[in-house]
Structures are given as structure tokens and as C-alpha cells.
Image (cartoon, rainbow, N blue to C red; front, side, top):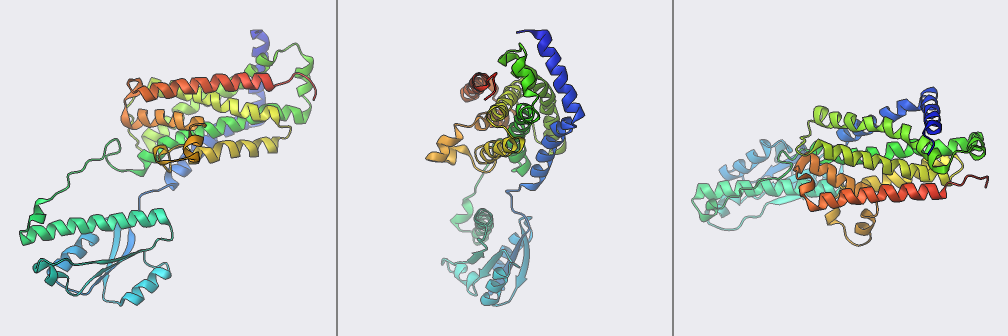
Length: 372
């Protein structure tokens, strides 16, 4: 490889990126995606509009109502309206949850009889509806334990001592932001590299490469190295956004995070390069890159759904995309901190290296130094 020639082409690429203002996109796009989605995606449900219809007006019913009123998950209104009117409010999207306490609530409890509480949840959005339902069940269980303790029954002896591992605060940011890093470092470098070769095809400057003694590997190295160096800085920028702005803890090895991210950027650039090689129009290259990166990035990154909960075709597809392997390493670095002591983390790092090698070799093989 003629390093002096590669250096000259690299200088040309840096100059082109500065002249066309593409370098702004290199740093603006990743930060925008992380900030917009980091603040915008929320799995936790808070301040659910809750109507409590207390038909008993007793000590125990007020005890249950107080549990809802003192929780950040509910904006509680105690009312005496009819069940039909309350259901109508749900249909009008004015209420999320209806809790109906029966008239004989305390009397049945004092006699040791089972008492049922009616709960209606707006299930228009299934995930949100299931979350709210679980919150209500948790409040009712807590109230039941308090009531059992007041009555001196054995139920008061039952308690739940639970702990959440890795994300003890149950913050959405801790679960979403590390996954977004994998999405950002997949999309942004791929879009940039997808334009590098195809724009020369559109302008006709690709004939300079056809007529030059430059080899295919030298040409690709000159194209990819500038983008690789520029996006390497995003590894640190995104890390600072995550830890300083979103206050996500970092418990693992920074060297593991950095090395895995560098390999992952090389994979992303290789994906864009492959698209740039096989397409002849910039708009086609951009659209194809977005389809190949953003959709799998969301579905198979673990941001919205754990890979372990997938089955069948989706589980297989998740293992075909590199984002799953990189995000496992990122989540380990931020939340778990096991590092290479975990056999799976070491295995996934090896798979990323294999991805990078295969994609680079494939891109070199598909790039033809001739007019098609």
C-alpha cells in the first residue's frame, strides 16, 4: 500500500468534508439523536389520571384511597360519580384509570370475607395500559398488607423485600440512553460513508480512480479513515452526554467501551461503504442506509424489548445484526461492569471483530475499478 498516495486522498476527503459542511452532520446528527430520543422515549408511566369512586366511605376505603393519592404514578381524584359516567370519561380520553371501591368493602374485610375492587384501565396503548395495571395491583397489594396488619391477621406477616439489580433507581434514562449510543453509532457513520463513493459516481470524478494506479484497498482506506477518525470523537461526546447530561452510571471498563465502539464504527462505515458501492444515486444510498440501520437498530438493539424475550424469526434476525452484540457490551459497561470477565461479552467482542473483517473484505471485493 502506497501510504503517500493514501495520505493525499485522505487530505482530499477532509477538505471535501469541510467544504461541503458535511463535518457538521458528523457531530450534529449523533448528538441530536441521543438528546431527542433520550428525552423523548419514556417507558415509565407517571401521573396517570385516576378516578377513585369510593362507595364505602369507611376507614379502610380511605386508607386505600390515600395510597393512590400519595403516589407519583397517579393523579388521583376521589368522586361519587356513577360507574357509567366514569367509563364515559375514559372513552373521552379524560381519564386513564377508574378504581371502584364497593359499598361493603370494610364490612366484608372485618368479617374476614373476600372483597373485590373494580379497576378499569385505558388499554388503547397496550404497553402503557399493562404498566398502569401493574401499578394499581402494587398499590392494592400494599394496602392489603396494611389492612391485614391493622386487623392483626396473618396476612400482615407477609412482606415483599425486593431489589432491582443494575438499574436500582428504575430510571428510563439508564435503560434507554446506553442503547441509543449503539443506534447512533450505527446510523451516523453509515450515512456518511454511504455518500462517499456514490457522490463521485454522480459527479463523474470516479473516473479519476479508474484511471489512477490507486488500488481498491488504498481507495477504500483513503475514503474510510477520515470518517473513522472524525466519528471516533463521537465515542467520547456520546459518553459525556450519557454520564453528565442524563446522569447514567458507568460501572465498567472505559477501554472496553472505547475499543468496542471503534470496532463498531468500522462496521457501520463498512455497511455504508457497501451501499455506496452497489448504488449509483445519493438519494437511493441514503434511503437504503436508513432502512438497513435505523429499523434494525430500534427493533434489535434491546432499547424497546429485550432480545431474550424474542422468539422465532425475530430472535434469529436480532443475531444477524451487529447492534445487538455492541449494545450488550455497552449495557455491561454502563450498568453491570463485568467486562471481559463475562464470557458472553468476550464472545460478542470477537463477533464484532469478525463482522468488521468480513464487511471490509466484501466491500473491497465488490468495488470494481472499471466502468460498468
